[in-house]
Amino acid sequence: MKKSAILFLATTITCQAFTLQSREITVIEKKQTGVSDSSENTTIIIGNDFFRFDGNDSLVIIKMGSRGLNILETLEGKKIDIEKYETEAPAEREPDKDWDQDWEEQEHYRGSRHFRGHWSGLEVGFNNYIHVASMTLPEEISYMTLNASKSNCFNLNFSQVNIGFSRHTGLVTGIGLNWNNYRFEDMNSITVGTDGIVGVLIPDNSVPVKKSKFNSLYLNVPLMFEAQIPAGYSGRLNIAAGVIGGLKLNAWTKLVYEDGEKIRTNGDYNLNLLRGGVTARIGYENFMIYGTYYLTPWFQDLKGPNGYNLEPFEIGLAFTFND
Image 1 (cartoon, rainbow, N blue to C red):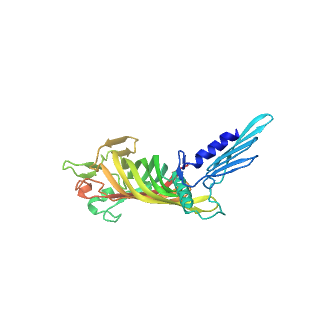
Image 2: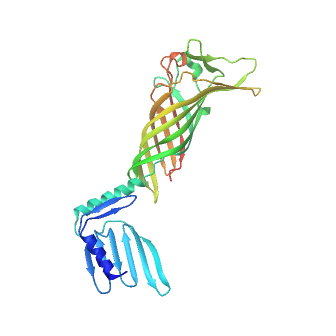
Image 3: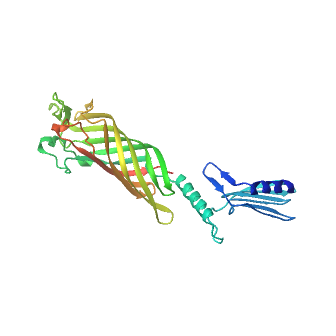
């Protein structure tokens, strides 16, 4: 590069504030540019090495932030190399409050852009429900008692949005599908009676019932705060908690008889269209244990089983795809 062009560039930058703009960060540097010139080498430094130019007849080095470009003139032609530098505050330098603040803001912003929470993925677990903080149901609705070991859930969380506060803390939201399978302990089913209230359905006894269950499908949207704590050499312990909302997509009962006949009956079963609750999870890297408890009424007012309301919950394992 011609010497006059280098000096012209240095003079222009010296006379104005330098603005560094990129897709990730914008820095307005208020310091004056330092320029040193010699017959063999020209160096231009803006700020505290935010931008650095070193040039002579055979080598040009341009460094901006954590990236550098080296252009070497050889007998075979130009040789271009791209280098990556560590971005950190210099250990030995005079105190500079403005630069410190700018550097900390850069690191904080870059870290928040790289935050990745733990929501998207697959979840499997067990579900049940309680009445007035007890899993022992009133005698009037004993037909709702579940076989807990065979009442399970499967969730597919296929969309995730991260809102980072730093590299390892932030908010996580997204969208997921939640399948709940409630396996009744007895061989009864449920139905909505002529009075508009959920009640017991006793199947025809001519053929024994093998199993009976109640299923639901929801679209779930969470909002959780997550913190990631260093654990071990390179792994992290992840802790998240927040609220979750559900939109009912479908509900149905299913009877399976001993002779193989299956009867599925779709309906709304007086379930509210929306439900909300609290959720939490803890785990290491992409393996989590999660739990969700729904606080809002599951059934419409006074239209649940015999007029009672139940509060569903689930607990299980999650395998996330946050990377």
